[in-house]
Each structure stands twice: as C-alpha cells, then as structure tokens.
Image 1 (spheres, rainbow, N blue to C red):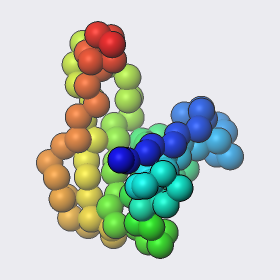
Image 2 (tube, helix red, strand yellow):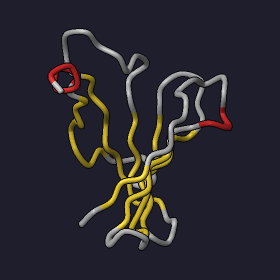
Image 3 (cartoon, rainbow, N blue to C red):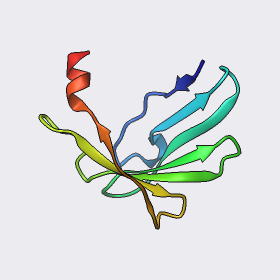
Image 4 (spheres, rainbow, N blue to C red):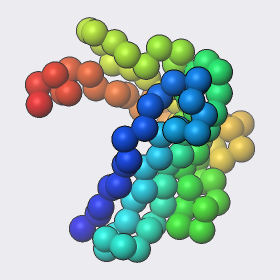
Length: 99
C-alpha cells in the first residue's frame, strides 16, 4: 500500500513559506520519497527526493498551470536539470472535472 500525504498549501510565489509538498510512504509511516516545490517567481519547479532527501529528479512546469480545455505539460528532468528524462508529464484537467 502506498500512502500520499499532501498538506493544503497555496501555490503563489508571494508566499514562499507555504509551498507545495507531497510525502510518499509505503507502508504508511515509512517515507520512501517526497516531491517539494521550490520557490521561483514565475514557472513552478519541483524536486523529487528519495527517502534520504537526495534530489533524484526535477519537474518544471509552464508559467500558467491552469487550463480550461487542454492538458498542462510539465518537463521531467535529471537531478541536475541538464537532461530531459521524460518528454512530458501531463496534468489532466478533464479528469478533475469528471470526478
């Protein structure tokens, strides 16, 4: 069983003390990794960390992460940000509306 814990935080660059954070544990109580938003002025950036806190991947988003009709694409990069590991990670807005 995989357990995701994501506290409610705002997404604004005006509040760098309340950035997005997701903790992944399996079994519940044993942290296996996390995704942490890094403070930036414009485009959202996230660090994917392993259980030891080391950055293993980076995720970069577009300036606007909200869309009424299409998908929002995020780039998945290597830990140092130099190599694109996966072409795109899609945020499927239409599935949120359906649920």
